[in-house]
Image (cartoon, rainbow, N blue to C red; front, side, top):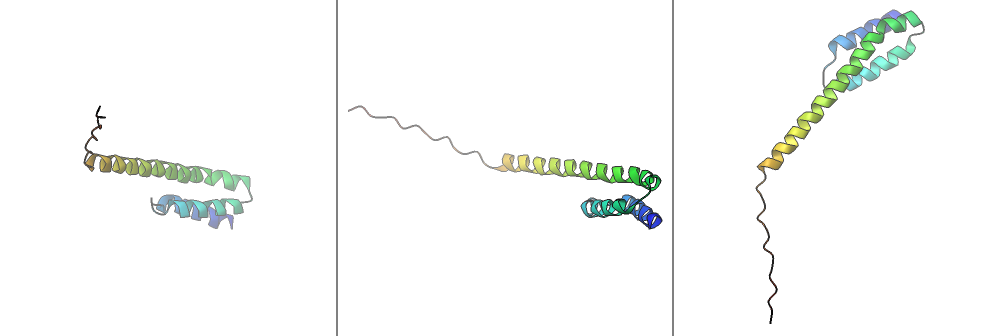
Amino acid sequence: MSTKATRRIKELYYDTTKSSIEKDLREAIELFKTLQDEPDRESVAIYMDGLSQMRSEWRIEKARVREKAGRASLKEQPARPQKRKRRLRNK
């Protein structure tokens, strides 16, 4: 089982995409939990770390794009005219 799990974790690392990273990382974590030997765990630790780094970087990138789009939509909105203050009339 450990060689299959190790092989699958490596496949997930090389084949993951922005849209599949969450699912792939969850699967890799479940596979990692099945590894009983410390040497097996050490051999895939770099792939696990890489998957985690990709997820972090892609989340940051996604947030930046969303923030940039939000700022752009604010610029496109027409400015509201200033409300005129009413003067009180003295009688």
